[in-house]
Length: 133
Image 1 (tube, rainbow, N blue to C red):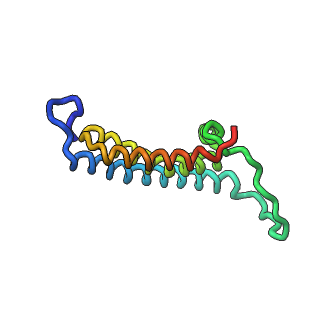
Image 2: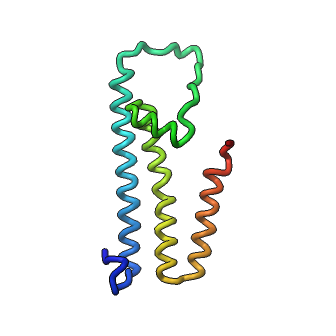
Image 3: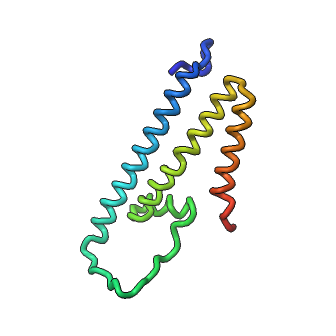
């Protein structure tokens, strides 16, 4: 990929390749993080007795914010690591849209800049719109 600050501008193909690699590596990274979390989960809770399946006992809350997930993952808690992998997977298409927006801005394509901003706004609203502070 060419340097952004060089005299040569990025070609459409360079931007498409970069976005494709970002999607590929994002999915691979999130899969690896979830795999590590699953292994840690099996190590940490593999010797626990089987639960009583006749009774339903819900999970406690706690991993519903980004900081809680980060602290859980850095403390090597299995559920925190798995949640971090899910967050990376969710962030992958959002980053793809942001990189597409940057590419359209570099190309000065106003129509696609507007469309991409609308799509990004809808995604951000759907993710953060339901949060209660």
